[in-house]
Image 1 (cartoon, rainbow, N blue to C red):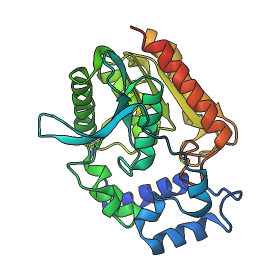
Image 2 (cartoon, rainbow, N blue to C red; image 1 turned 180 degrees about the vertical axis):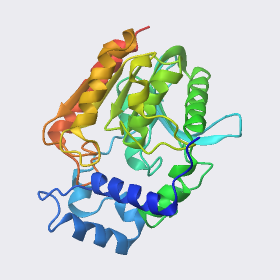
Image 3 (cartoon, rainbow, N blue to C red; image 1 turned 90 degrees about the horizontal axis):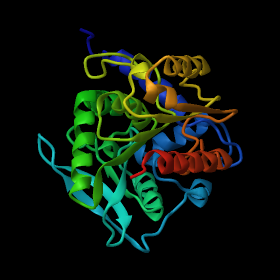
Image 4 (cartoon, rainbow, N blue to C red; image 1 turned 45 degrees about the horizontal axis):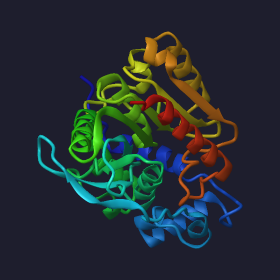
Length: 309
């Protein structure tokens, strides 16, 4: 059995993730990426998830008019976990979209994505998958965040919590078996894994989720390992300029999907030229408006196709 990574390996992994999460956007911030990261470190880890200045101006905020939106508690086998929920006010018999957060947890951007889905008529719910491990916003550096939070959230636990969110949705306005999942970065990887493990969904959208990751006891499989075994189709949205996900991995994933079963073959991967990692994250300098908007349209079309009653 694979052993967990040691501290040095976590630092290396965190450094790679940091590079891919914050590519430079000269149209928004002056100076180099390194200068931006140094400024963020001085302000504390919250600076990486709370936009200011030009970043704040580009950040999308979706209102709650016509929506029911609130923090809720989702029962699991090991106790309740918090989640953010948004849905059309007073509506029932809705298709559900589970929104799977990045390594930073359920912050305002993830909540806003839930509201965007709710405006489209979905019941959207974003569980806090790191609840048992702690609060990601309390960590002041990426290595600490990975070592103390992310590394301790096992795939088995996360997939169990995802199933719990599906069960919760059925009791709160969702239709059993009419659900999908979408995830960003860390959450994008979980979408691929869920497609091979959980049968209670009909489709998923993985935004720049790692295709190959460090394998250990907590994370025993790469998404590329299960590409041929999907139970429902996934749309993968990737950037060709992502420094953390090689184009060769994306190409190999496409090939493996094509040799899989019906759901694998029905899956699709879009590789956007020149797009960096986290191109949908409008609160970060990696945001690319045109690419993000095209990805969102494709995401909605994918769920409109797969989440049919």
